[in-house]
Image (cartoon, rainbow, N blue to C red; front, side, top):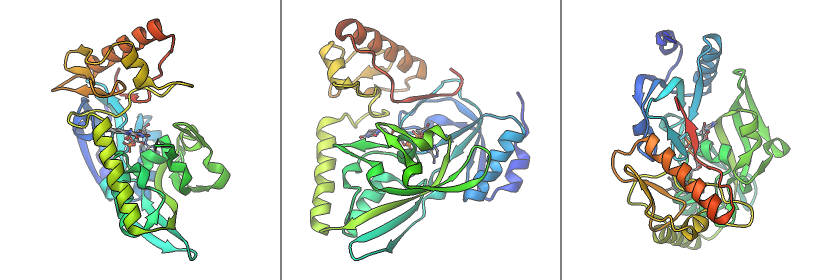
Length: 306
Ligand SMILES: Cc1cc2nc3c(=O)[nH]c(=O)nc-3n(C[C@H](O)[C@H](O)[C@H](O)COP(=O)(O)OP(=O)(O)OC[C@H]3O[C@@H](n4cnc5c(N)ncnc54)[C@H](O)[C@@H]3O)c2cc1C
């Protein structure tokens, strides 16, 4: 389907890139071109893009920091709405003696906010340092680590609905479970979040940040591009452990390789394709099922022309 995207550029403040190479927008450094990538500057831009996509029946995909995605080698049809740097503003407001609200655009990076809040002596996000998520992606996926998750601090979210209306959700409307949220079910586009943080000891918080980063470096293979954990942990076990138990460390298809250091990571060892990764994922699932009886479910999302 050939679509003329030029009218869109005239009605938004943000930028537009045609045939945008998605490998530049994903932490796996994999993916063919997106027909049209938009960098919205504000929620009005997002509303305009949603309405344009509906009117012209063009598929719309929302991109955060691209850290949980496998994008097809044949790219993505339609519009990719990149909630990134252009939506990364943030501010703090004290609401009581011990509580501070952080209001941030969905493009702000979780790790940056974890460091920034620790520096200001605000507790609540330190566990998340090292997760390369945008706040919008963390809110949609309920990012988590070390027995903590994003919803512990999320008190409200500003969204654009799939019909192109703006709304604010809080309290019960923000239902969540492991890597699953009500925002996901509603197909909400998160434009901003409000996080409730508590005052703490700055030095202690900075120490937690440093220790968390050290722990990640020890346990995770961070020298090659990846999308973090490929599979969700099944009830009662750990995906990485099951992969390792099956003897699949180092298993390779093309330039995609199961990490020797962490069984739930698949690394791009150099110009790897989405096809390589997908074939490897299928092989790992088959072998783990056969050997351990567990049906591993991918946590990474497949996007585009597969
Ligand atoms: C080295 C490494 C370590 C990681 N460690 C962890 C970890 O410890 N814990 C963990 O939970 N995850 C981890 N991840 C995975 C990843 O960072 C999270 O899943 C994160 O929540 C994805 O956020 P993102 O902004 O990159 O979203 P993307 O990957 O861009 O998108 C993921 C999904 O969120 C949707 N989305 C993104 N932004 C928005 C928005 N503004 N509005 C609506 N939908 C949106 C997308 O459409 C897509 O469905 C890791 C990844 C890497 C590479």
